[in-house]
Amino acid sequence: MEIINVLGKPCPIPVIEAKKALRKAAAAEQVKVLVDNDISRQNLEKMAAGMGLPFSHEKQADGNILVTISAAAPKEGHSGLPGSGAAGISGGLVVAVGQNTMGSGNDELGAILVKAFIYSLTELDTPPENLLFFNSGVKLTTEGSNVINDLKTLESKGTLISSCGTCLDFYKLKEKLIVGNVTNMYAIASAMAEAARLINI
Image (tube, rainbow, N blue to C red):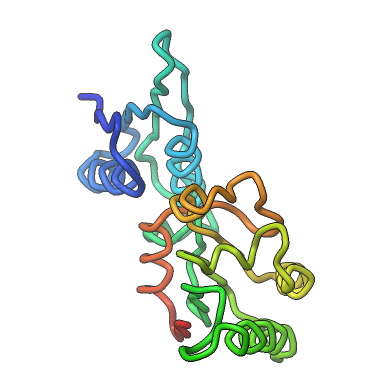
């Protein structure tokens, strides 16, 4: 099969192009994607894992990475739907956090409110299935955040916590992530689209 060349393409294009090819591929056919960074490789691996598809990768002599995903039938327990893996299929409550304060007006008050909101989520009878952080919201999942303990409590209750990799890079916080995993905007959009209930702050 022709190799999908996404060298130099930003998130989430590698995932989107791979998913397009997988939709067209016959059972057991291999989809090969050439990427130039490990974050893209990780995102593709998470997508494949969420869809229950075999995944492998090989580093090339020039430093690029050739990813291979087999378009097999999804494994038992996986739906194969777009939100799987990186941010998880919701089917329940998804909370999307796009800033490190809550509401508009006063940032000091907004910081107090967002802390109270995150804590309140830990007290729900049924916690969110997904917490998605993007833009300045990723500051809440990284070193120095005053909601880390509450996020860890939610994680221990089964909430999937995901932070946008592009956003972490922008704020130079990738190495300071404390809780949850790194995801991409395609997975975030998919999880939001598939949510039975969505809170966006």
